[in-house]
Length: 217
Length: 245
Image (cartoon, rainbow over all chains, first blue to last red; front, side, top):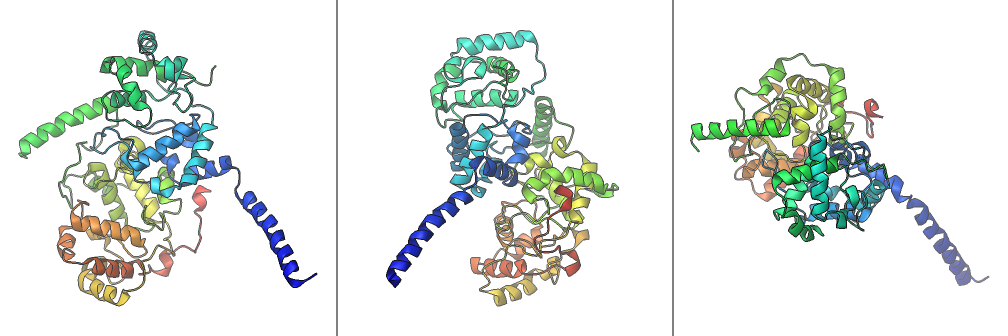
C-alpha cells in the first residue's frame, strides 16, 4: 500500500468516525432542554417543569414548540413588547435581559423540551360558576375557538393553548393585544376580535379559561 | 415634584397595587423614578440588620436565588449575575432592600426581592446570612490584562479610601467587597454608577469617577478583578455547593 493511499484511507476512516462522534455528542434535544431550562435561569420565573410560574408570568409547559420558541426570540429581539409592572418595568424586561444566555440551538432545545411536558394543572382558585359560564359564552361568541380551540385546548398550528393558563396572564395578554401593546407574531390578527371585549369581559374570559383542565380531553 | 403631590400619588398607588396584586404588605410600591438615594431613611434595611438571622432558613430561601446567582453564589463569569458569595452582610441587605424599595433598578431580579416571593425583614436577614458565609469564587471573570500598571495606580489614588487596599470594602459603611468580582459585572455597575443609571450609589463615588476615561475604566476594573480575597474566604476551584445537589 502506498503512503498517500494509506493516508487517504486513514482520512476516510476518520471522516466516518468523526461525524459519528459528533452525532453521539448531540445528545437527545429533550435531555439538553431540561438541563438548560434549569441552568439558564428559566426555572426561577417559570417554575419547575414550566408549570409553577411566579407572579403573573405564564406557565409554559405543554405548549406548541414553535410558538414557545418564537416567544423567546421575540422577547429577546424586542418584537414582543408588554405593559409595565407596578414598578414601571416592562413585564418582558426581566426575561429580555437574560436571553443572551441562550443560543438559537439552546432555545430550540428548551422549547422542544417544554412542549413535551404535560400541561399544568389549572391553578386558578375556584371562581363562581356564573362568571365561568359567562366567560365561556364570550369566548365562543368572540370566535376565539377558531384559533385557540374549544376550551382553549386544541389550538391551530403554532398557536398557544390558552386553556388552563394563569388567569392574570390571560387577562393581561388579551388586553395588551387588544390595545396594540403586544403585536408580535399572529397576535395582530386577534385585534378585531379582542376589541369587542371590555376589560370586565376580558376578565370573565380569563376566569373561564384559567379553570380549564388541559390534561382532560 | 412637590412632596405633598408625590406622597399622595405614592399612597394611591400603594392601595391600588396592594388590592390588585394581593401581595403581602411590604415597602411602598411606586413606579421607579430618577431619584438617587444612597441611604434610604426608615428603611426595612435597618430592621433586617437588627434581627437574629436563621442560617438554615436562609439556605431554604437561597434556593430561588441560586437559579441566577448559582448554587455557589458565584454568578456567571460573563458578569450577567454577580458573585455574591462572601459579600458583607450589610451590603447584601442594603442591595436587596434597595431593589425592593425601588432605589436600585433590576427588572430580572425585582420579583425575587419582593416580600411575596421571599418574605419580609426576617427573610432578608436569613438569606443574607447564608450568602455572606458562602465561600468565594477563586476563578472570577477578569479583564484583558493589558493596562494593569495604570489600573493599580488609579486604584491606589481613587478607590482604596472606600474599597480598601485589597478591594475588601468596609461592612459598617456599606462599601462592597469588590475583590473577586467578575470584570464584566464591575464594568456594568461602574458605568451605570457613573452615568446615574444606578441610583443607589454613594455620591462620593459618582464624584470620584466622573472624569475617568474608558481607558481608565478598563484599567482600574481589570486591576480590581484580579484582587484576590484572603485564602480563607475562597472556595476550591470547581467547588459545588453540597447544599443544593
